[in-house]
Length: 194
Image (spheres, rainbow, N blue to C red):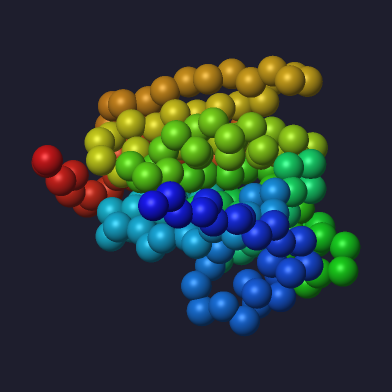
């Protein structure tokens, strides 16, 4: 017996926001589809927390707001609501029209990669982030080994790629005049062997 295919429900952004506000778990909204966000590993959360601490220390007194995991971002060109792991917004914060809880002007985003989101973060999500006019720098941080991929906007539709693997490596975040070291980012992280 052939089972009928399940029809996907396409939600409007307004329907998504109404559901999201009352939900106990977070969801991404991708062009009409609502997708649950799974919880991260301890390593994932610790790396994001360490990066947040490094950025807070380096940006103290500067006109930036730093958000970690729970701040919603709206990308209108892709009809995408998402929650970056770490995001920096230059003040004044710009909010989505009619919202008090959704930013639209990040200059820096970092994602801690997991097995399930690695390809999405590198491809579709990065492609969506690049449509944000204020967006300048992107870090992809591996949680399974000491490895960071760094993308920096160099011109219209031009991005420079660099990668870092050594504890002695430093990454110069030019949009926020901040330098971070791999040694700090991976401080006390114990990589699991498979």
